[in-house]
Image 1: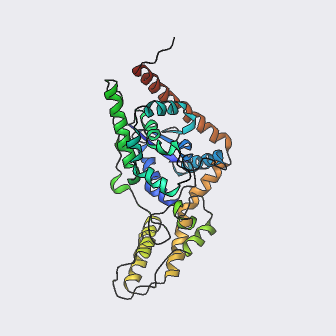
Image 2: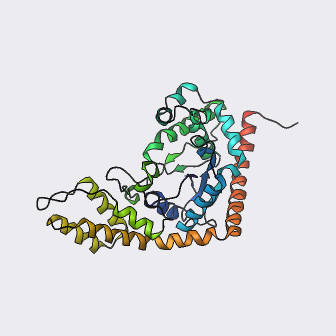
Image 3: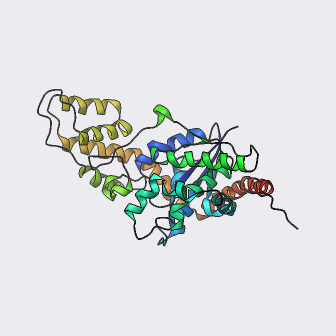
Length: 331
């Protein structure tokens, strides 16, 4: 069975964009693949070196993914820092990663621009740590977004370089897992790009948001002054609201408001009110499950320990073999 790995950021709550863009598909993947999902608390330090509550962040994200459908009995769900073998493989791969290729990485240059006062070594070698995360389980496929494609290509380079240097075929060269039409892109509420916390709290609807918070966010969503011609194409902000409605509302609800827009009789206040209630209805079962899991620390501890044990079984085997290939021997 092929192995699939995906990292989960440990900062910030999950939003509807995460849910439709990845989580639903992760739930499907765990039925047919040997899946590893890890919470990337090491990675978070490259941009947040002094987190106010690192453990609380990890705990929240773990609860949210469990509530959204990841099954620790079917997949290996673990915390990155619970697998120290990753850090050692990261060190070994760094010995064969070159300054020039790391400095040319698009995401590194972008981070340097955004955080000029925090250009740390971890930021520079982020692709190597990502490669260690993937290769520690000898993964075949990795679900990645457009912004991570270069990092995955670098992982392939590091795997190939290791194999060539040590005259072996040990590491597979992982490929991107393409969800195709199953990957739904959810736009934000600001009228422009995708939903995301980095665009501002009001741009995203989080799975843990209370109903009143959701209603306020949706009612503040950007719109326009209204259509002026029959069958006029919706502007980007309105098309965004229709896209969100397509994800959470009944088909006839979406059809009604699309028809109202085409007839120039749409009332955006009514559209937002309906959308807000549909989002509340959609997210409520997940939010209730999140709160239920957070209220059961024994269950969370059990899941984390089970995931760490399963991940270490895989990671320790890989590292033992890598050390042997390189030439490390115990006296």
